[in-house]
Length: 117
Image (cartoon, rainbow, N blue to C red; front, side, top):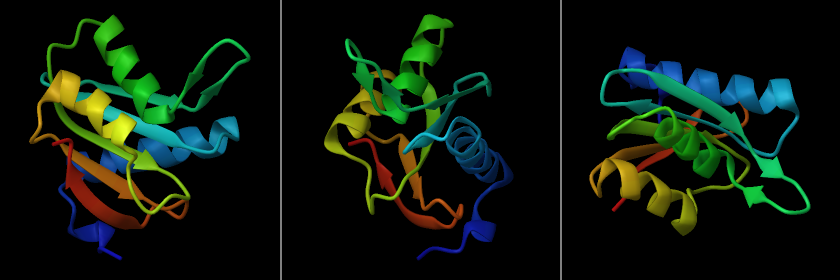
């Protein structure tokens, strides 16, 4: 487990926003992304009969729909120990392979930081 207090303030912010989205909406995952201008986009898992998106995919889609050109960082709060390949691909599509993806547990503790690579 990685010490979340060692994160830069802006990275702590997106972890906190992701955790809040998960709790507020009662969904399996919460996510937040920060674009090239510093704007943040927060989302939860989408599970409709006709549409299934992870929280991170939804946050990336929200950023794109709002005109973001790139991502600085992404965070996901999940029970899983890592970010899925599909989640990392969505981040990579907008932010590039070096974009950090912070993966935290439901308690907000950072588990790992990987690149979208």
